[in-house]
Length: 78
Image 1 (spheres, rainbow, N blue to C red):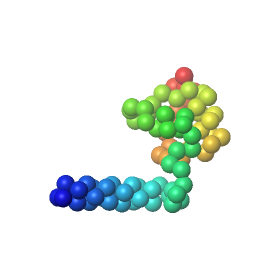
Image 2 (image 1 turned 120 degrees about the vertical axis):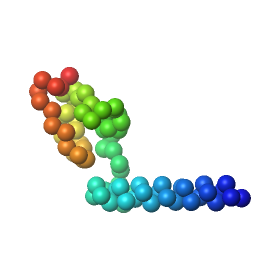
Image 3 (image 1 turned 90 degrees about the vertical axis):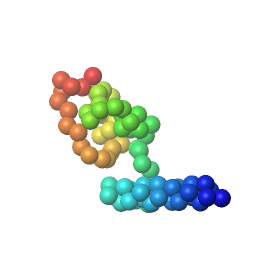
């Protein structure tokens, strides 16, 4: 019984935390977190400044990817 109550409390805490995160980025309730699968793949790569291809840069501009801006020079694009 205590295990189930603990799991419910953890789930509610996680859901509340995710909602607070969405508010800080200005995401509309029920809105998508990522613009596309490519956006998801880029956002989950390791590092503060993951590698970016020219195709991804074009797609990001077209889809309006949001978040903390990362500036790349032409030499850094794959």
